[in-house]
Image 1 (cartoon, rainbow, N blue to C red):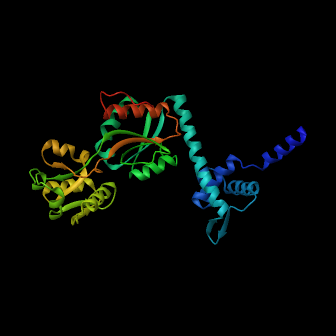
Image 2: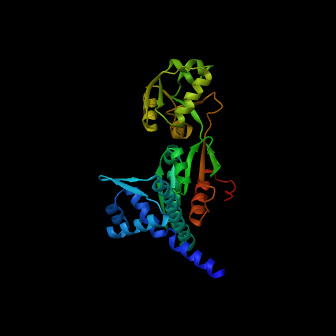
Image 3: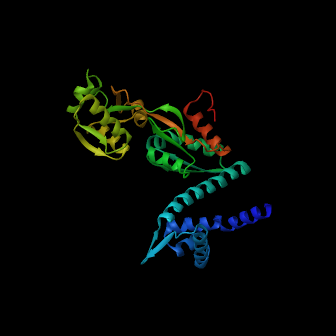
Length: 316
Protein backbone atom coordinates (compact mmCIF):
# COMPACT_ATOMS: atom_id res chain seq x y z
CA UNK A 1 0.00 0.00 0.00
CA UNK A 2 2.83 2.41 0.90
CA UNK A 3 4.59 1.73 -2.39
CA UNK A 4 1.33 2.33 -4.28
CA UNK A 5 0.81 5.66 -2.44
CA UNK A 6 4.37 6.76 -3.16
CA UNK A 7 3.98 5.82 -6.82
CA UNK A 8 0.66 7.64 -7.05
CA UNK A 9 2.01 10.82 -5.41
CA UNK A 10 5.11 10.64 -7.57
CA UNK A 11 3.00 10.51 -10.72
CA UNK A 12 0.92 13.42 -9.50
CA UNK A 13 4.07 15.42 -8.82
CA UNK A 14 5.27 14.97 -12.39
CA UNK A 15 1.97 16.41 -13.66
CA UNK A 16 1.96 19.48 -11.43
CA UNK A 17 2.58 22.94 -12.77
CA UNK A 18 6.18 24.06 -12.42
CA UNK A 19 7.17 27.54 -11.27
CA UNK A 20 9.14 28.20 -14.47
CA UNK A 21 6.09 27.29 -16.54
CA UNK A 22 3.96 29.77 -14.59
CA UNK A 23 6.61 32.49 -14.89
CA UNK A 24 6.77 32.00 -18.67
CA UNK A 25 2.97 31.93 -18.95
CA UNK A 26 2.67 35.10 -16.86
CA UNK A 27 4.92 37.06 -19.21
CA UNK A 28 3.34 35.52 -22.29
CA UNK A 29 -0.22 36.25 -21.12
CA UNK A 30 0.69 39.89 -20.39
CA UNK A 31 2.64 40.51 -23.59
CA UNK A 32 0.54 38.31 -25.91
CA UNK A 33 3.68 37.37 -27.83
CA UNK A 34 6.17 34.52 -27.55
CA UNK A 35 9.02 36.63 -28.91
CA UNK A 36 8.27 39.48 -26.47
CA UNK A 37 8.00 37.03 -23.57
CA UNK A 38 11.32 35.44 -24.59
CA UNK A 39 13.00 38.85 -24.67
CA UNK A 40 11.56 39.80 -21.26
CA UNK A 41 12.77 36.53 -19.74
CA UNK A 42 16.14 36.56 -21.49
CA UNK A 43 15.60 33.19 -23.18
CA UNK A 44 15.07 31.94 -26.72
CA UNK A 45 11.58 31.69 -28.23
CA UNK A 46 11.61 27.85 -28.44
CA UNK A 47 12.13 27.79 -24.66
CA UNK A 48 8.95 29.82 -24.19
CA UNK A 49 7.06 27.54 -26.56
CA UNK A 50 8.34 24.44 -24.73
CA UNK A 51 7.26 25.68 -21.29
CA UNK A 52 3.83 26.72 -22.56
CA UNK A 53 3.25 23.29 -24.10
CA UNK A 54 4.39 21.60 -20.88
CA UNK A 55 2.05 23.81 -18.87
CA UNK A 56 -0.93 22.99 -21.08
CA UNK A 57 -0.09 19.29 -20.76
CA UNK A 58 0.09 19.56 -16.97
CA UNK A 59 -3.28 21.33 -16.62
CA UNK A 60 -4.87 19.19 -19.32
CA UNK A 61 -6.68 21.97 -21.18
CA UNK A 62 -5.80 24.62 -23.81
CA UNK A 63 -4.80 27.97 -22.32
CA UNK A 64 -4.67 30.12 -25.45
CA UNK A 65 -5.41 30.05 -29.14
CA UNK A 66 -4.25 32.07 -32.12
CA UNK A 67 -6.61 34.07 -34.33
CA UNK A 68 -4.47 35.48 -37.10
CA UNK A 69 -1.78 37.58 -35.47
CA UNK A 70 -3.70 37.79 -32.19
CA UNK A 71 -3.30 35.54 -29.17
CA UNK A 72 -6.57 34.91 -27.32
CA UNK A 73 -6.74 33.43 -23.83
CA UNK A 74 -9.23 30.61 -23.36
CA UNK A 75 -11.42 30.81 -20.24
CA UNK A 76 -8.92 28.51 -18.49
CA UNK A 77 -6.05 30.72 -19.67
CA UNK A 78 -7.77 33.86 -18.43
CA UNK A 79 -8.26 32.25 -15.01
CA UNK A 80 -4.64 31.13 -14.90
CA UNK A 81 -3.48 34.61 -15.94
CA UNK A 82 -5.25 36.02 -12.89
CA UNK A 83 -3.60 33.51 -10.54
CA UNK A 84 -0.18 33.81 -12.18
CA UNK A 85 -0.31 37.58 -11.69
CA UNK A 86 -1.12 37.09 -8.01
CA UNK A 87 1.63 34.50 -7.55
CA UNK A 88 4.27 36.55 -9.34
CA UNK A 89 3.41 39.61 -7.25
CA UNK A 90 3.60 37.54 -4.06
CA UNK A 91 6.91 35.98 -5.13
CA UNK A 92 8.44 39.38 -5.90
CA UNK A 93 7.16 40.76 -2.59
CA UNK A 94 8.62 37.74 -0.76
CA UNK A 95 12.02 38.33 -2.35
CA UNK A 96 11.96 41.98 -1.25
CA UNK A 97 10.91 41.06 2.29
CA UNK A 98 13.74 38.56 2.62
CA UNK A 99 16.23 41.13 1.32
CA UNK A 100 14.90 43.61 3.88
CA UNK A 101 15.59 41.22 6.75
CA UNK A 102 18.94 40.15 5.34
CA UNK A 103 20.40 43.51 4.35
CA UNK A 104 18.38 45.97 6.49
CA UNK A 105 18.00 47.98 3.30
CA UNK A 106 16.18 47.59 0.03
CA UNK A 107 13.25 49.08 -1.88
CA UNK A 108 9.89 50.40 -0.81
CA UNK A 109 6.98 51.05 -3.17
CA UNK A 110 4.63 53.72 -1.79
CA UNK A 111 1.47 55.22 -3.28
CA UNK A 112 0.38 58.74 -2.36
CA UNK A 113 -2.70 60.73 -3.23
CA UNK A 114 -2.31 64.31 -4.43
CA UNK A 115 -2.56 66.29 -1.18
CA UNK A 116 -0.14 64.16 0.90
CA UNK A 117 2.27 63.88 -2.04
CA UNK A 118 2.50 67.63 -2.54
CA UNK A 119 1.87 69.19 0.87
CA UNK A 120 2.87 66.58 3.47
CA UNK A 121 5.45 64.13 2.18
CA UNK A 122 8.28 66.23 0.65
CA UNK A 123 9.91 67.16 3.98
CA UNK A 124 9.30 63.67 5.37
CA UNK A 125 10.81 62.03 2.28
CA UNK A 126 13.85 64.31 2.52
CA UNK A 127 14.36 63.42 6.20
CA UNK A 128 13.94 59.72 5.44
CA UNK A 129 16.46 59.97 2.61
CA UNK A 130 18.99 61.45 5.03
CA UNK A 131 18.31 58.87 7.73
CA UNK A 132 18.13 55.79 5.47
CA UNK A 133 20.24 56.36 2.34
CA UNK A 134 20.37 52.62 1.61
CA UNK A 135 16.61 52.40 1.05
CA UNK A 136 15.32 53.26 -2.41
CA UNK A 137 11.82 54.72 -2.42
CA UNK A 138 9.45 54.48 -5.37
CA UNK A 139 6.58 56.97 -5.02
CA UNK A 140 3.47 56.71 -7.22
CA UNK A 141 1.13 59.73 -7.12
CA UNK A 142 -2.39 58.56 -7.89
CA UNK A 143 -5.95 58.71 -6.51
CA UNK A 144 -6.67 56.99 -3.20
CA UNK A 145 -8.82 54.18 -4.68
CA UNK A 146 -6.03 53.29 -7.12
CA UNK A 147 -3.43 53.25 -4.34
CA UNK A 148 -5.64 51.01 -2.20
CA UNK A 149 -6.18 48.64 -5.13
CA UNK A 150 -2.46 48.46 -5.89
CA UNK A 151 -1.68 47.66 -2.26
CA UNK A 152 -4.24 44.86 -2.18
CA UNK A 153 -2.86 43.52 -5.47
CA UNK A 154 0.70 43.61 -4.04
CA UNK A 155 1.91 46.21 -6.52
CA UNK A 156 2.62 48.67 -3.68
CA UNK A 157 3.86 48.11 -0.13
CA UNK A 158 2.03 51.01 1.51
CA UNK A 159 0.21 54.26 0.85
CA UNK A 160 -0.19 57.75 2.33
CA UNK A 161 -3.59 58.98 1.24
CA UNK A 162 -6.47 61.33 1.92
CA UNK A 163 -9.47 59.21 2.87
CA UNK A 164 -12.80 59.18 4.62
CA UNK A 165 -14.10 55.62 4.82
CA UNK A 166 -11.68 53.12 3.33
CA UNK A 167 -12.60 49.44 3.50
CA UNK A 168 -10.48 47.94 6.28
CA UNK A 169 -11.17 44.26 5.60
CA UNK A 170 -7.87 43.84 3.73
CA UNK A 171 -6.16 47.10 4.71
CA UNK A 172 -4.72 48.49 7.92
CA UNK A 173 -5.68 52.19 8.06
CA UNK A 174 -3.77 54.38 10.53
CA UNK A 175 -5.10 57.93 10.59
CA UNK A 176 -2.30 60.44 11.05
CA UNK A 177 -3.89 63.89 10.72
CA UNK A 178 -7.11 65.61 9.67
CA UNK A 179 -7.45 66.91 6.13
CA UNK A 180 -10.59 69.04 6.21
CA UNK A 181 -12.16 70.33 3.01
CA UNK A 182 -12.79 74.08 3.36
CA UNK A 183 -14.07 77.08 1.42
CA UNK A 184 -11.10 79.05 0.06
CA UNK A 185 -11.43 82.75 -0.80
CA UNK A 186 -9.30 85.85 -1.22
CA UNK A 187 -8.73 87.68 2.09
CA UNK A 188 -11.66 89.76 3.39
CA UNK A 189 -14.13 88.12 1.00
CA UNK A 190 -17.84 88.63 1.92
CA UNK A 191 -18.43 84.85 2.06
CA UNK A 192 -16.16 84.68 5.11
CA UNK A 193 -18.69 86.51 7.27
CA UNK A 194 -22.14 85.81 5.80
CA UNK A 195 -24.59 84.24 8.21
CA UNK A 196 -25.66 81.40 5.92
CA UNK A 197 -22.93 80.17 3.61
CA UNK A 198 -25.33 77.76 1.96
CA UNK A 199 -27.70 80.58 0.99
CA UNK A 200 -24.97 82.90 -0.27
CA UNK A 201 -22.56 80.54 -2.04
CA UNK A 202 -24.68 79.85 -5.17
CA UNK A 203 -24.49 83.56 -6.06
CA UNK A 204 -20.68 83.61 -6.23
CA UNK A 205 -18.38 82.20 -8.95
CA UNK A 206 -16.98 78.87 -7.86
CA UNK A 207 -13.86 77.08 -9.10
CA UNK A 208 -14.13 73.31 -8.71
CA UNK A 209 -12.28 70.09 -9.37
CA UNK A 210 -13.66 68.26 -12.38
CA UNK A 211 -13.72 65.00 -10.43
CA UNK A 212 -12.29 63.28 -7.37
CA UNK A 213 -13.05 63.02 -3.68
CA UNK A 214 -13.14 66.80 -3.08
CA UNK A 215 -15.69 67.25 -5.87
CA UNK A 216 -17.70 64.34 -4.45
CA UNK A 217 -17.84 66.10 -1.08
CA UNK A 218 -19.00 69.36 -2.74
CA UNK A 219 -21.68 67.54 -4.71
CA UNK A 220 -22.91 65.66 -1.63
CA UNK A 221 -22.96 68.86 0.43
CA UNK A 222 -24.88 70.72 -2.29
CA UNK A 223 -27.43 67.92 -2.52
CA UNK A 224 -27.87 67.75 1.26
CA UNK A 225 -28.29 71.54 1.55
CA UNK A 226 -30.48 71.90 -1.56
CA UNK A 227 -27.95 74.20 -3.26
CA UNK A 228 -27.73 74.57 -7.03
CA UNK A 229 -24.11 75.49 -7.68
CA UNK A 230 -23.00 77.07 -10.94
CA UNK A 231 -19.26 76.44 -11.29
CA UNK A 232 -17.51 79.28 -13.11
CA UNK A 233 -14.69 76.94 -14.02
CA UNK A 234 -13.79 73.26 -13.60
CA UNK A 235 -10.12 72.29 -13.38
CA UNK A 236 -8.04 69.20 -12.71
CA UNK A 237 -5.14 70.87 -10.91
CA UNK A 238 -5.13 72.18 -7.34
CA UNK A 239 -2.30 74.63 -8.02
CA UNK A 240 -4.23 76.20 -10.88
CA UNK A 241 -7.29 76.60 -8.65
CA UNK A 242 -5.20 78.22 -5.89
CA UNK A 243 -3.67 80.67 -8.35
CA UNK A 244 -7.05 81.64 -9.80
CA UNK A 245 -8.56 82.23 -6.35
CA UNK A 246 -5.61 84.51 -5.51
CA UNK A 247 -6.25 86.45 -8.72
CA UNK A 248 -9.91 86.91 -7.76
CA UNK A 249 -11.48 84.61 -10.36
CA UNK A 250 -13.71 82.99 -7.79
CA UNK A 251 -13.86 80.90 -4.63
CA UNK A 252 -13.01 77.21 -4.29
CA UNK A 253 -13.40 74.19 -2.06
CA UNK A 254 -10.02 72.61 -1.37
CA UNK A 255 -8.06 70.64 1.19
CA UNK A 256 -7.08 72.85 4.10
CA UNK A 257 -3.53 71.50 3.83
CA UNK A 258 -3.26 72.58 0.21
CA UNK A 259 -3.70 76.24 1.22
CA UNK A 260 -2.15 76.25 4.71
CA UNK A 261 0.94 78.21 3.56
CA UNK A 262 -1.24 80.74 1.72
CA UNK A 263 -3.43 81.26 4.78
CA UNK A 264 -0.35 81.73 6.97
CA UNK A 265 1.00 84.28 4.46
CA UNK A 266 -2.34 86.11 4.34
CA UNK A 267 -2.82 85.63 0.59
CA UNK A 268 -5.86 83.37 1.01
CA UNK A 269 -8.51 82.83 3.67
CA UNK A 270 -10.62 79.81 4.56
CA UNK A 271 -13.96 79.06 6.16
CA UNK A 272 -15.09 75.62 7.39
CA UNK A 273 -17.96 74.05 5.50
CA UNK A 274 -21.21 73.64 7.47
CA UNK A 275 -21.25 69.99 6.48
CA UNK A 276 -20.58 67.06 8.80
CA UNK A 277 -18.85 65.01 6.12
CA UNK A 278 -16.28 67.64 5.15
CA UNK A 279 -13.57 66.01 7.25
CA UNK A 280 -11.07 63.68 5.61
CA UNK A 281 -7.94 62.11 7.01
CA UNK A 282 -4.40 61.70 5.85
CA UNK A 283 -3.75 58.06 6.59
CA UNK A 284 -1.08 55.43 6.30
CA UNK A 285 -2.42 52.26 4.70
CA UNK A 286 -0.91 48.84 4.05
CA UNK A 287 -2.15 45.31 3.52
CA UNK A 288 -3.45 43.58 6.62
CA UNK A 289 -1.61 40.32 5.87
CA UNK A 290 1.63 42.09 4.89
CA UNK A 291 4.56 41.64 7.34
CA UNK A 292 5.96 44.99 8.49
CA UNK A 293 9.60 44.65 7.50
CA UNK A 294 12.51 46.73 8.88
CA UNK A 295 12.39 48.89 5.74
CA UNK A 296 8.66 49.54 6.14
CA UNK A 297 9.06 50.23 9.86
CA UNK A 298 11.83 52.77 9.18
CA UNK A 299 9.58 54.62 6.73
CA UNK A 300 6.50 54.42 8.96
CA UNK A 301 8.46 55.77 11.93
CA UNK A 302 9.78 58.74 9.93
CA UNK A 303 6.28 59.39 8.56
CA UNK A 304 4.68 59.32 11.97
CA UNK A 305 7.44 61.44 13.50
CA UNK A 306 7.10 64.05 10.78
CA UNK A 307 3.33 64.34 11.13
CA UNK A 308 2.68 63.83 14.85
CA UNK A 309 5.73 65.22 16.66
CA UNK A 310 5.69 64.57 20.40
CA UNK A 311 3.12 61.77 20.34
CA UNK A 312 3.64 58.10 21.04
CA UNK A 313 5.10 56.01 18.20
CA UNK A 314 2.84 53.91 16.01
CA UNK A 315 2.15 50.38 17.34
CA UNK A 316 3.26 48.45 14.26
